[in-house]
Image (tube, rainbow over all chains, first blue to last red; front, top):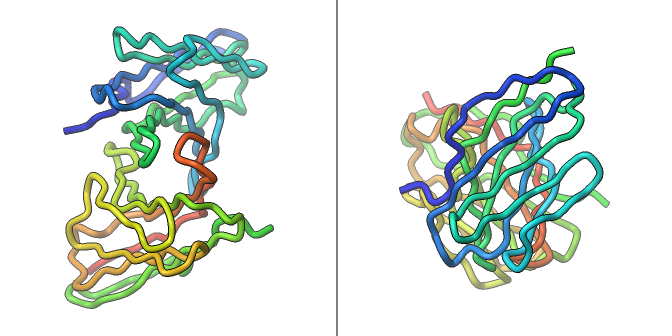
Length: 110
Length: 112
């Protein structure tokens, strides 16, 4: 039973527009959430995170929103750039283990 | 700093063979994990460790063994390889369970 779900396998956006990637989780013990970016033939790289005591965290063009009551988080990328094209993984931690979703392929068209 | 080093990068095994995937980190991280990446399945947690001498099972532990005798090393053992274990394996480490993990570059394993 997947504890972290990314229901959109892929997303295509125009350069300069907003990209919104969504993630849902089921385990109430998760209290720290992260987004990773992955290019082919490389390991995932950490992008941004948020603690369960917050509902928003911003870092440049990247913002993560957390809705604890809905067990939902999202990653906003504004403005989107062609170099953002990659697979994005949502992940959740209970303080001991880190569990990932299935990933969303983002394509930013120029 | 080398970060997280995985060896080998590529490996082909015959069904029933055994092998160990090596993972080493030089950041003095307590937390280490093994994942496998399969198309459409994302990164699935195999085993993880919160410190030397402490390991636990993740989402897909069957067919894999781990041990953590030192802080630096976290090897993953396949005792009897099966075609279903064909995958890309990633090792990762972190200073704490609430921080971002640093990943290795992966081991691509094919079992024929």
